[in-house]
Image (cartoon, rainbow, N blue to C red):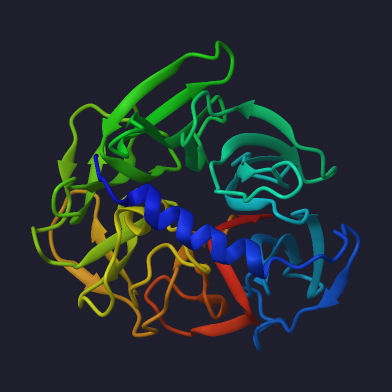
Length: 350
């Protein structure tokens, strides 16, 4: 995908971010109480641990929320002028450990962080980042990293400059094999990858380069046999797909009306205050075989990103610009777990 104005828009936005960045000292030991949903003592109450990125006055914090005790703990707080775009937690079926992050460390003193993120690994036990994949050119970045179902590879989107004189870029969806370091091209003009829990399918969002329309796509894990799941022009924007634990349905965030203008950068990386895109959206679902689309919520929220409970399919949680929520897969029993601004990443372990 190519766009001539993207870098200009990015520089303007990030310059504003840098001027608002606080100078507080990062902390990794804070604990605060979180009110649990009202059904805490029922057998079906969601348990386990949520992981999310909280944004407070431009300070980003990767937090761990114990659903059993109602406590929130800081795992990693970005240093001054650092930028944590997104993360994913290794789906090992038990307690989480290995995280992959799209992160841009602070530049030298006096310089602006333009958000050209690389990929890093970190454990939930120790806030030490290990570089996995670094940009090799100016204005190159990696974002939307997610683990494969077997934990052997990582999907991510890759923005690479084509011509710095004309500010043109190409966006690709790729897969990194951790054992060999091999990187495969999965799809062109694609973002928001999400593999199915059984590893047999891959959902992602295709972006039409010229008009910036988005559509939900289902493919094989390597990108083969790609097909659209939604009728054209059904949504103004779609993103953040996820599969049900049974692998039979695909949930996604969808916007049906154009309320604000979007730049190329809004579409491919969600670079803004804290949202997947800047359009009010709701949760929808469609069968992995295609067919009728069902609307699940009327929250009209910004930056929706969800996960299903790890032990059963009775609950899903989602992050948004105004808080963390839990609800049933049908959209019923919606409850706000925690108020605040959360970016478009979320993980849930036992």
